[in-house]
Image (cartoon, rainbow, N blue to C red; front, side, top):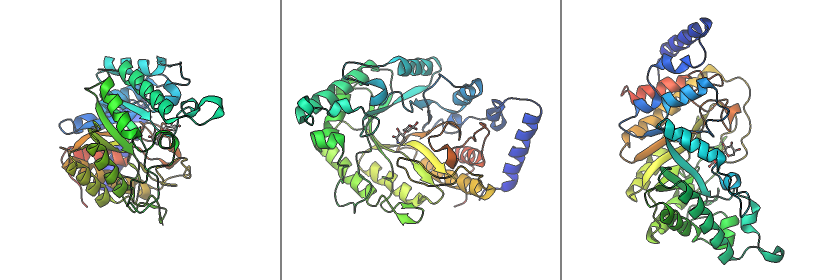
Length: 378
Ligand code: XIL
């Protein structure tokens, strides 16, 4: 456990700073060292957002101080970038990429092939018929070549396929979702997507990305959910490698909660490492209250969060970063899914390191302590 006195002192320093009229940008200076520096020799530290439009000065300062890679939260998804067959809307992601280049921050592309936030035109055939396999393949190929090609040399890596594994099964099969791309093309859509992405930018890192693949028995409020997803992910990744998919790594999304099994997370990292793959934690958040699913929609929370829950959240974050730290050779990147509890897809559940006012939470100091080698008690 971390010492509550330390947190009380930090909170006290913060309230004094605010009482003296400093803006929320002072939050990062209180901790003196940014997250990215705390893990500089180990792995990249990222955040998600569609920067810079709509971000306050304090938020921009916070991003520059803490992160060295950004995942566009929505603006590179098929729905945003390719709303109809002949239309590409590059303005927002182009602004993001330029801003990141200007500020020496890398960009992680998210995402090329997904069942969600993907417009229906991809799957419409002629005369009201479902799309044929050939047409779906041609569309996926031209989408990937266009987007990866557009950002060639400017995007560090891509989530090529997102969330292809279904939620509940025993893990004896790949258990692919019976969803749009799978129905249209069949199980080889993944290998094809990786090959096309590699063709468009041979230097970009290419990852498979999914949630709850770190466990076979993930519980949601005590109920077994998402059973078998880790075992299914291993079967899937082995096949992709056998089929020659140019895959560099796997993104464990990391939408976690106060009762996430840390040993399952560590086992998953070790298992992926044994396949010769890199690992990233691609969408990290740890809910402090409310429902703890990694899937849509997010529900619950919204009320006050007890100090005990915030301490427990800090402990879980510290345990997780302790694992990442010990597996630094395998870890490519740890990306938090947003900069503050206000800028979170599950803001009611207070899942991030900075609160809704961009003030550090106990979890921030706990993570910085791990980076500083102060370790943590298990
Ligand atoms: C979420 C964004 O954070 C929201 O703003 C948007 O409304 C829905 O998508 N898994 C993913 C991300 O891979 O793209 C999702 O992001 C969160 C779950």
